[in-house]
Image 1 (cartoon, helix red, strand yellow):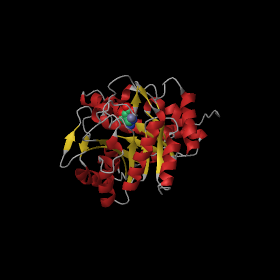
Image 2: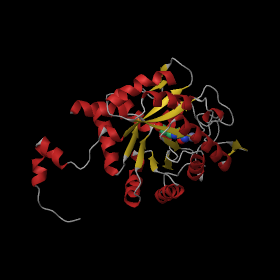
Image 3: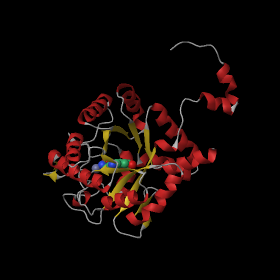
Image 4: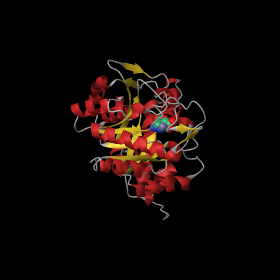
Length: 327
Ligand code: PBG
Ligand code: ZN
């Protein structure tokens, strides 16, 4: 870096317009994705105990909520489903009458322009809570990929713009890509959870989605927090397999991966600020230790600055509101 003894810009920082003029990063609602929990049934909006401020909606109750998001400039959502019935094979994940297929149809009917992404995994749908089919205590990779491909096709058929496989199975992206193409959904995008680290920051989500594994953990198929190069390799493999958008998750603990991926690859990079990141800010602010708005905006801006194109966050609605209030 070139040494620069000129301190004029620094001295002029008391002028807000000038600060804004030279700002390098801008947080805008257009890059935000709101994760949404959809529960099977009708007529229900319920609080989620582990995530204060976030709710579960039945498909018929989604439209009011999403219409508020759109008014704030948040035009993208990521759907997670809670089925009425779980089984060993996660059947509700790929049933055409399943909760996510219903929700997508409902939303696309009311908001054709809304970008609808659907998480593709089995853990919310299996009785044992693992992301795939289990045999002898092990997750069966290839059988699982088949079912993830089936689910992706069902969501694409219902009208999803993006499918987002989060199971971390080997070859899940290429499996899903060929299934989509073979069914005539060449234009459905794949946003892959490419660099998904095994993390304790997912635990509020697992309570929200009722998806905790009943035995073992997800370390068999999620990344080790110590491994940055392995994360980049996973991203590279997903790109070779046909991913359109690659994701890094959790966000705050993996900004180095976001920055490195940004400099190596030219695809859009999504950073997922997960449930535990949301809850840390929420709980500390409820306790009066930090200012929720300032901390949420600061961390979101830092994720953008690190190189994320897309920011998936439970704070999407709030951030959009705060940005609007500032304007
Ligand atoms: C499903 C999935 C998880 C998250 C997103 N998709 C849970 C997990 O892997 O246990 C976590 C999201 C969050 O914590 O907000 N595989
Ligand atoms: Zn899963």
